[in-house]
Image 1 (cartoon, rainbow, N blue to C red):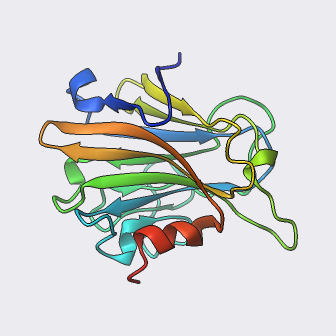
Image 2 (spheres, rainbow, N blue to C red):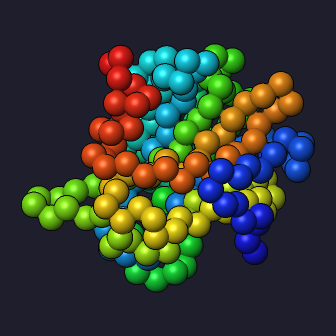
Image 3 (cartoon, one colour):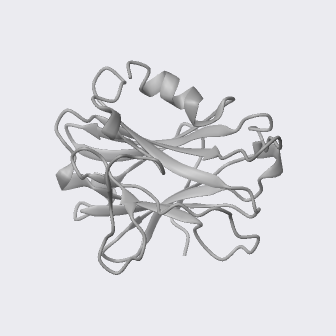
Length: 201
């Protein structure tokens, strides 16, 4: 069952709608055989990651195999964000998430104010795949304990020439956490987002 449908710029107050939420799952799905990767930037008050290990992606230095899984997940400096097990291709069938990550809210360090979730296309050889060749791409948030989907953001067709998209961000306030749909495209893959959130490194 789908949760609340977000539009670009809209937000979902996780702490208000589900005060008992401790661990959120973030799922990304798409209906093509392109190699998409979901990553996260854990940023501070200044909009920049405090350490390079606060970029959680397939090539992260910090990795761990969680109980019940057979491949490692990258994780953030504080252990609050566990990234996706890297899947090399998507699934042409619309049967669920292709990659997912886990957000442990009680582990996120006090200096981390936002967790920005991004999806990028991994390019192979001379073929340059863009989002106009990717269909059915979405991001969704669910409660790990109940498996209930809380909200979903479906990417539209406005990212044609882009190969990187800021899907949304978890945002901390004095009242708890919310998730905001960003929907901002970039050209230049993951590097374009590193240049925005991790340029000091």
